[in-house]
Length: 279
Image (cartoon, rainbow, N blue to C red; front, top):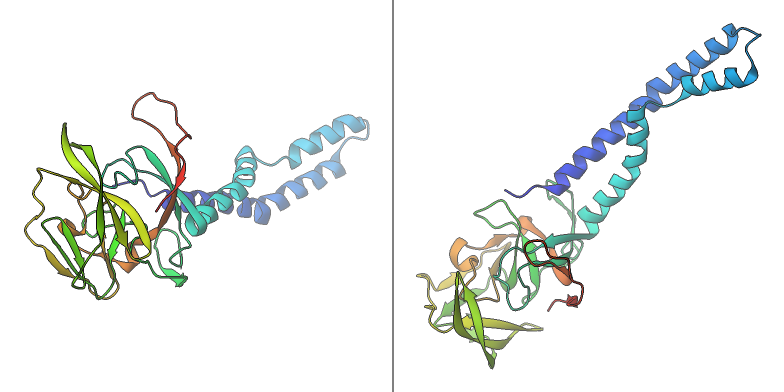
């Protein structure tokens, strides 16, 4: 399972905030009383400089409190930013090629589909519903980790995928041949084709491998209420709703809208030359 950074941030914010609050509520008064007691009992012969130095030591916050006081506002800001507005993700697989490549870092709008509480994911209020053709980050029904795919089926839709033809509610999705391509399939490079496809208001590219069978057993699905049918743009090399089923609305993370960085595997420096808005 992926590390839940929202949970980590919530814990860090809670711990640093609790330390700071405890110090302000209890330890600050203890230090103030100790300083008053020292001032009252201090030998008059002690110089002013020595007296002030000792008072500073008595009133000085513990190191742990200093760190908590410094980190709390920063951690809170990051938590709010990641939980409610924007969050970066690194894409480790090629299921969304050619749109998103392995090693791309994408930015996800967490606010696009409604405001949700961090960690538990409970929606506070709606903003909009996912639209056909949008790229969405979510948690699939079979595994507790983040996935990124394209929204193909909306609640109530009938989806059919047979012989590499995608049909939604009885209407074949329009796609036009664009070019021949070489597609990585495991350790092999196979010939394939690149097509321009129209899903709703979104025009995007999808690729197909010539020699890979189009069907995986089941080829027709009805999307139940509150669920979405997701597919990768790398149609013949994507584990998606065709395999593990539809995605529940409460498992939505946000809408991916941009690539802001790319890093090839190994000791390679990040690249910013292919930053782009996702479609």
